[in-house]
Length: 186
Length: 100
Image (cartoon, rainbow over all chains, first blue to last red; front, top):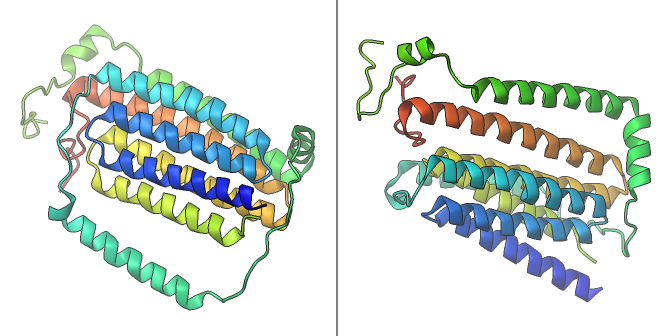
């Protein structure tokens, strides 16, 4: 039992540390690698929380597909070291800190000091149970259909945005490579 | 065993890191990565609550959130590729055509 808790703390610490490192890294490739570390830790936490299917899908979909897409685009755009963000000289930092403090204060004022005991032991959800629930519950079945339409729209939109332009359209598009693109004439 | 409060605190910390990155970083790719981190924090919270209540529907919703995240990444990266093709930058301070 304590081993489970120790594993949870370990993976949570790794996730938070990799998240902060992603935030502070100057190189986008390093940020992507740190985010992969965070996502793998979250997959381990899913494993501890009775969700082995979600852990497998986290590794497959997030670190296997999405992060490879990120790395591919970063290397395609040839982003090198980007200038670091001077967070101490940015008013957004202080505004965000004050807002987060206010929200946290309000949440803590409304919270009840009540201990919620999680179930003990493991009862991993099987793929069969999840599939049976997903395809028999009417609400979830409707959501499955809506998600399929959303995925189709995403595919069509991505292909449309990434298409090769016509030559005349390319000539008409503003090629703003200088610092001040022609906004006045647009 | 793992108390639900600790899971929620972890989700809150991860969400705060993602929101901070979203607000502070000016690189569009890094902002998308921060959105990914926020979605994952929400997933951790949903799985924690599903485990507390013994309800399997929470895990199904996490599946949906993952699908929406995948669609969002595909569209977002295609948008930034299209922007980069004309403006040669993904710095959101320089993509200011619609700014006042």
